[in-house]
Picture 1 (cartoon, one colour):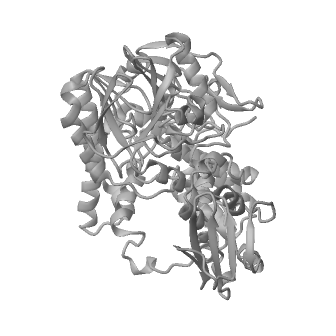
Picture 2: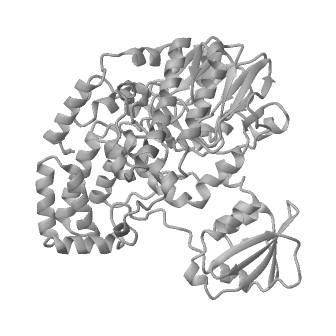
Picture 3: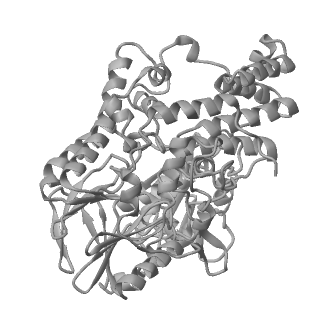
Length: 623
């Protein structure tokens, strides 16, 4: 296959970056290899049907010097993150890295092992546990600690334990307060859109290789197994809370509202080891992930890192996290955590300073400069988050989407705006000509802006689409940020080959099963097509027979509202069913048995007639 080669401007930018960053600093290369005990070779993990859910071998090309089609800084990060196997953190604590987007850690206890963050998929978690046992013996899992409420830290739990073991008290599940609620809700309300954009963010449809996907900065990519979830048997709610789990003392620090809404750090005093969850990694993290999420708070994030330094530095010899490799030595730990802390605090404080001087988010992103000590710290480089989109996230957190310019208060939507821009510039062919000039001059940002107007005004314009795809490819080749590269190259792929839809889904049945009745009713509410429902006035009582709870559900003015109360005779319909049957109903199954309808069954039919499930194949790079 013939690939587009990097333009001279991209190659020149790579050379400038090589000269500006301390590539002669090889400490991370040594730390990433420290404690290596063995791996699976080739690393290919399949499910029961034989389908591949993780292909670590597909990244074997990551060796040697960076090719001109990959930013050299991103290449360095990807070669580090692609390393896989079992590693000793300290005697008694081990990590399997490179078996999924995240790490899984094992802490040996009196009679077994405590598992920390069991990856995304049970298949990858089981393979990691098997590798650990091959080297450390067949220890039973006595507890699973989940650091926070993102799927790459809990989805594989059924690969290391079972519901039966938890119910029997043989295995504890420990998580921060609010974990279950946030875990199951995150991918429900905006789940369709987040899932579609996550395909771009992780480059799920891209070929792996020097012209394609090379990683995502935080990890290489996401596994594609069958995630699940188990409710915690112990929720941690207070900093300073300590528990002894099978002879292992654990001291917890709460860190809510940081990288995740429910997150915690914890220390193992007996091992002089500190787990920082995902709040201190070897990259600048996201304040607003490109797939979409609520904006995170860098101010409290930095404060919790300060608290961790003050609370644990004197009693810690190693810091490890749920991504990347550990840091050993007290002085090195304090420097590492302080750099991460200062990074988020600087982005927060300087964005506020400049927005108070009248700059917009986009202007701040182009103006802000990190101090040299942060700019040259490898763990602060923007491989996953970036200064550019993090600054805009801080602006959005405080000021919202509107930058204050009246001309931006009520612009035309993209397609209509594009039509007018194209007409003003002399027509489609003229705009493509201008974009070609920008492309040849290496101004790919401007070329992309022009060509986006072309394809939004006329999606079928072949010359515009082709040049736009090439432009996005060049932007991908130049990106230091792994998720930016994936976004650019995914956009180019869809321009050339059509939409690839949503390659991986996070609405797994075992996770959806944990939705509360309120969350299930919310799932209905966000699917109501408002204009279609304007004239409906529906009253339904819903009883969850297995939970003994009932709700009055009304649909008026295109809004579905629910209130918990006992059924009454004035409801047009009384619907009785289990929560599991309600989940099936929410998925569109209105005909299977298991529901009792008393009253007007047409109410349910009317409700379903106005539900819009969303479109997992919606266009992103086209209108």
